[in-house]
Image (cartoon, rainbow, N blue to C red):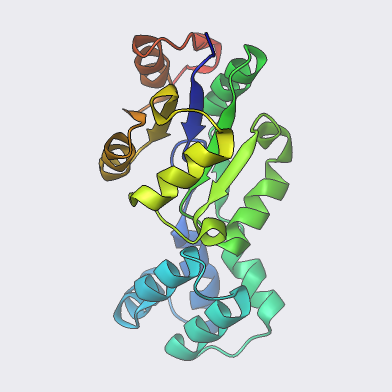
Length: 213
């Protein structure tokens, strides 16, 4: 019998992110605080621009131009990228769980709503940890986003396994429900120890070695 395929979200599961870093860096260029910059971008439609970027509807250059025009910035694209991309830290206990699952023969998938700039950065920064993953299903690349069915269909098609043989781990309940609706099994991530227990309940022998909170 084949081992279940385990699929991990990136943000707040395999890694952590902090948009406050972006607000601080770009805000400083305008001479305002991080909080003031956050309020500015919220009133200027950053969420809609970001959603289009993560859905693969705009290029990095187009996204940079839109954000800068909205907030009154005028900096070179590469400077925008430098301020935008470095907001991630690895969740090392979960990375250890993933490595353990890979060593036991599980196929692993990273499935994330993300954009081209962030994905390129964290795939470089965490290259060693991400080497455990067999497939990367990224929203901007497949032009579909969680919790939509098309995103999970792309995940299942990538591994060539039945949906019921796949387990999706995400910190957002709506995304896990989307996985369930698409025929996958799902786990709502809360903490590493809880992840180990939830996977075990689904028949996956995850090691607790990396599961200290």
